[in-house]
Image 1 (cartoon, one colour):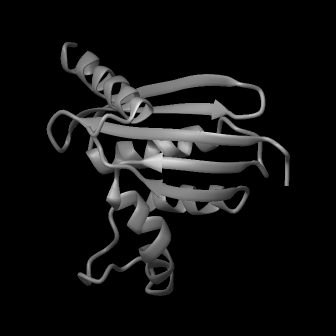
Image 2: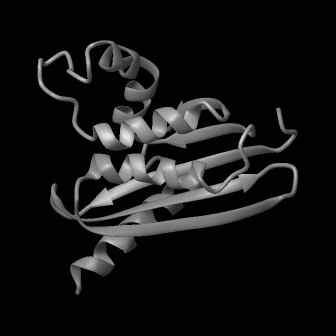
Length: 150
């Protein structure tokens, strides 16, 4: 494992579901004492897609084999990656509701990416005063709002 350790906060937002959406990530390198913000948007998307996109974009921004602590306020992401994904893969991407798993393309990307890291997943309650969670929420909403004005 690489000695670098990162703490990552992510969030997604959507105005309507589907609608214009935004994603954001804060990447903190604990060893080099820096903080990087990444964010973006999509014109027609869903909140869950933005939550997943934020994590995928963050993972693509740090060196492989890094140790990561990821904070998200999305139970969908936490449950999906820690509980459901193995069952989905074993059931040919059919969920417990007997329907095709939504966002399969993003789940496949995330599943592949996670193999390259040592990740500790953490759920953080949204809008609870956590400074970095509040910041990614604000950035994601700004990205979605920016598209809504176009």
